Image (cartoon, rainbow, N blue to C red; front, side, top):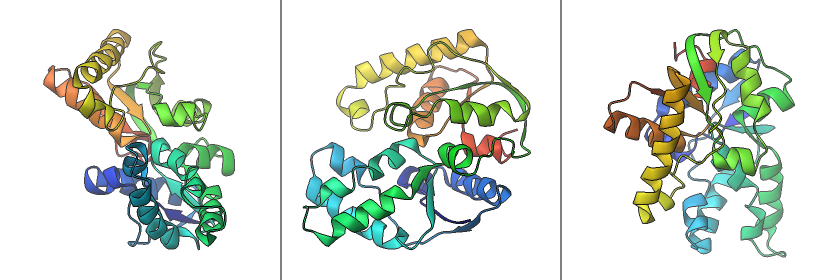
Length: 240
């Protein structure tokens, strides 16, 4: 299958290794991966803060870059969830509304694409250690992702998947939320870190770089030896 990578802003700018790992995983799954450098943002920062016009302008560029793809894969549940809102940015009689809907229908978060579309869980990955999955809010609540990433992690040779009872609790990042309500943000992430420490894991794995930044940054501040890895890094074998 020919697949376009929608790399997302945070991966592109802050964790490019996640983008490279995503390409490796998709190729291992038998996909022909392309990347169009015209792509920019999914529009979520502007959308969530009420700047619909700016979000619409951004989304037009990304839609144009992706609309020729058979499937579009994103290493982010948050950005994948945002694609579902693309059509509503345009008026009913605007041709861009139909274009947005077509591209959005082909967009998939990485774990959902591998499990739901390709029927794959075992990608020949190896990882030595105890890990816990963090259910990023958008992936869990908007896309219904819970079983898929766990199935992929369970198939990794040498990996012990530890279920954390707090796995579905928000990490406190929430985009602008962490800036507007820093005290609440810190309280939320500290609760997550305490649960992870109690679980005795070596690493926390998630599908959103935003959550991983929040968890890793606070863990480092508190002097905790916890690694925060993207699912793609584990599946590519690069996280071992």
